[in-house]
Length: 424
Image 1 (cartoon, one colour):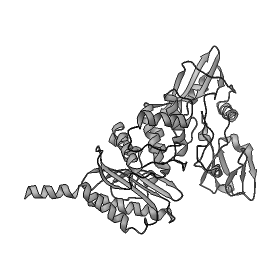
Image 2: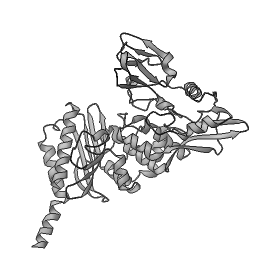
Image 3: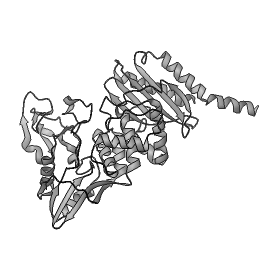
Image 4: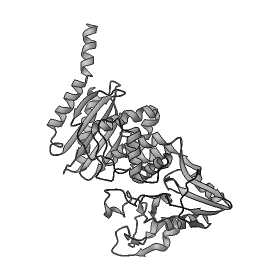
C-alpha cells in the first residue's frame, strides 16, 4: 500500500501532470487566446523540461533582459563595483569612467569615488576617449527622452544622469542637483516638467510637480556637462581631455555590487542595467561599448543556452531583443548556481512583498521570486516558484502582442502560476 501511495505521489509531481495543467489552462484561457504565449518550466538544478508551451519560440523579453545583464555582472564583477580608473602623472590626475552609475546617484549608497575625488589635491583631468556608445540603446524610442525610465548612457554618470524634481507646499518645487535651477522656464502649456529634446531647458507650469510627488527627468548628457557637474559639486575645477590611456591603471571601488543588483532588479531600473553592461566591458578590458560587451558575454558565459539570444541592450528597452522561454530558464539555473539562494531571493522581487511584484501573489509567505518584463503589448515573468509541497520550480512565462489591458494579462499569469503553486 505504501509503495502504491508513493507511486501516486510521484505521478502527481511529474512533468506530465504539470504539463497537462499548463496546456489545459492556456487552451481554456480567454485572456490569452489572441496573443503569443510561451512557457517553460523545469525543476531546480535539473535541465530536463517539466512543461513547455512554445518554449522554443522567440519572444520580446522587455525587462527580463535584465536577467542576462545580471548574470553578466555576476561573471565579471566581485563584491565591489569598480567606480573609477585613474593615472597619476606628476601633479596631474587623469581619470576615466568605468560605466559605474553610483556617483551621486540619489537612490544608491554613497560612492567612495566621491571621497577620492574630493580629497585629491592634484589637477584632475577627465578623459572619455574609450567610450564608444551612443546616448541611447539600439531600438529605443527616441520620443521617450523625457521619461524617467530612459536616462542616457555615459562612461561616468553623475546624479544618475537625471534631474530630480520634488513638489512642495505653496506650489514650490525643489530640483536636485541645484545646478539645474538656472535652466527652468515657466511655461503654462507644460504638463509637469518637460525638457527640450536637444538641450537642458526644463519647461514647467505654475504647479510644476504636485506636493509630495517626484519627477525624474533625464538630462541630455555630454562630456563637457559631466565635468561641469563634477566641478560644481566638488567645488574644484575638473578639465576635459581626450587622450587614450593604454597603460595599466589604478582602480577606485565605489559601492557593493549587491546594492546595484538589488536596486536594478527590484524596481527594474533601466539605467543601472545599461551601465552594468559597461561595467562588464571594463572588467574584461573592452572599450565601453554595449554591443561588444554583449558579444563577449554570450561567447564566454552563455554559449550553452538552448537558443542563442538576440540581445541588443542591457535593460530590455529595445524591441530588437529576442529570447526563448527555455533559454531564460536555463539562464536562471546558471544564476542560481552563482548566488546563494537566500541572497538571490532577496535580490529578486518577492510576490506580494517587494519590488515590481509587491501587488501580486499576495499570500502569507512569498512563493514567487521573479523578474517582471513589461512593454506596451508585452508582459513577461521569469524566476522561481515554490510549490505548496516544497518543490522549487524554475519558470519563464512570456506574453507578447496582446491588445488587452496589461493588467488583465498580468492577473491571468498570476492565476495560472498560483494554481501551479497550489496543486503541486
